[in-house]
Each structure stands twice: as C-alpha cells, then as structure tokens.
Image (cartoon, rainbow, N blue to C red):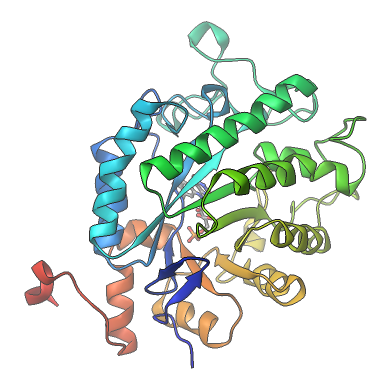
Length: 353
Ligand SMILES: Cc1cc2nc3c(=O)[nH]c(=O)nc-3n(C[C@H](O)[C@H](O)[C@H](O)COP(=O)(O)O)c2cc1C
C-alpha cells in the first residue's frame, strides 16, 4: 500500500517521497536573480527530506513580477544563478521544479515590509496589464493587446527553455491566486470580446496555448505541473467553480500537464471560516477522480499523520506543504520518524537523529 514515503513517478522522474515544498515568495532577490537566501531556503528543505522542491513564483519577464524583489528567469544571469541551487538540491536526492509565472494586474507592488501597497511609476513601478481593465486590489490594469498576449506566450516559452538549461527537473505553471492565467480564466476579471475572452474555451486559451508551446520545447521526459485556483471563493454568479476546474484539468492533462495542485482564491481575502485543516483537499480529490490526473493537495496540512492519511486514502498524490516548512525545514525527516517509516537522513546529520 502507498504511503507518504512511497516514490511518485512523474513522466521521466521519480520523486523519492510524496512531500513537496510549496512555492513561497521570499521577496529577497534583486534584478530577478536568486542569491544565497534562496540557496539556503530551498536547500534546507531538500536537506530536510522533501522529495520535491518547488521554487517561489519566478517571473517570465520584468513586467511579470509582483514586486521588484521576486525571482526571474528571463536572462542568462538568472540561469547561471539558479544552477548552483539546482545542483545542491540534486545532491540531496530531491527534485526541483521552477514555478513560472506572470502576475498581470497584480504586478508593481511594494515589498511586504513596506506594506505591499501598489508601487507608483514615480518610484520605479510599471503599468500593469491584465486580461481586462477590471479593478484588482484598488488598481485598474490596462487590457493586454493581442500583440502583447503573443509576447507573454513567447516569454513563457523562453523561460521554459532557460529552465531546462538551468537543470530544473520540472516546471510548474502558476495558474492560480489571481495572477495572469487566473485573470484570464475567471470571468470575474476577464471581460474581453476577442478569442481570449467570453466562453470557457476562450478564457482558458492563454493557459492552454502556453502549455502546448512549452511542451514543444522541453524534453518529453520532463514533467509539467500546474497550480490552479480550484475556486474563486467569490459569490458572483460568474465566479470560477470546481466544475470549471475539473473541465480545465481534463484539458490540461490532454495537453501534457502531469500533476495539478488545487489551491484557491486570489481576487479577494478568503474568509477565515473557510480556512481549516485540509480545506482545499476536497478540490484535489475531486479533480483527481473526475479528471483522472495526478493531484497535489495544499492548504493547512501541518502534521505527519494528516499528510500520510491523504496518501493512504488516495485523496491526492502529492502533499504540498508551505508554512509548516517555514517552521520545520525537516518536516519530511520528522514525519518519517513519527510515522515509523524508514527514511534516509543526510549522513552528516545521522548522529543527531
Ligand atoms: C510567505 C508565502 C509566500 C507564498 N508564495 C507563493 C508562491 O510564490 N507561489 C504559490 O503558488 N503560492 C505561494 N504561497 C501559497 C502557499 O504555497 C500555500 O499554497 C499556502 O500558504 C497554503 O498552504 P499552507 O497552509 O501549507 O501554508 C505563499 C504562501 C506564503 C505563506
């Protein structure tokens, strides 16, 4: 029977267990270049036993950033800076995926330590653009022209090539949390009347075209992952629903996406009453069962038993842990110990465990 420490095959790669470090923005880069902070943050969780390390959302272009402190993958300097991080994670027996992303209308914000307010043009900010000129967090973005959409597509493709060059094992597209892909597929934001707006098929077009283009430039053996917002958590009748996510997931799978992590929200604050242990797990389970695709569960998964139960009950294939990994970089090693499952500890640390 499978458990949290059973390997997981994703196309040509095998994860040594079912625990992933969830992507978490560190707001610690400059010019999109990862540095020692990113090396230590990502490597610590690899030393701590997670089978898959997923980088923070990494912009495909300067205008795709959310703040000036995000990581990027649009030039060679960034590729070279990612390489030692990728190599170190590999030395720990873990795999590493880069989460590629464009923040769209949520771009040009200040650092969280400065309150994460919109960054004005006069202070180095930029004109943000989205599917439509729909207000988002007090900002009205400009609508992307069709030519600009083509640039977004080619930026994703170039970054995907760079991800291969940097040695990443996988790419995850960040298609949730109110960022650009989500701004297109949710009718709450997308009010376009061209082929990228309107009905479901048109609203998911940008994401699907990018998936198709990326699959052409990455090795057949390289898994492609996607994170989606399974629901908008909004009351409007045009809000994105789980049934839409199931439809989308089927199409993503047909186009070569290997695993989908089901997150949620991104356009408004999610009511606290909706956030509790495993609150998003039912989305991952429904997508897994109905779309017949591997899924990742994320959201308030904090204990070894809770994580193991998800795999034992086959409710999701990968357990994606964010904040608990901030508290305990050794979550995976500690989980194996608590669950009484045999697991490797780095030889340098064996005397401590
Ligand atoms: C500091 C921080 C930064 C985050 N940055 C990202 C990100 O870059 N990409 C992403 O998909 N989710 C991001 N998230 C969301 C987490 O990956 C995760 O989905 C969320 O925290 C819920 O999981 P948890 O309860 O295990 O923390 C971030 C969360 C935190 C706390």
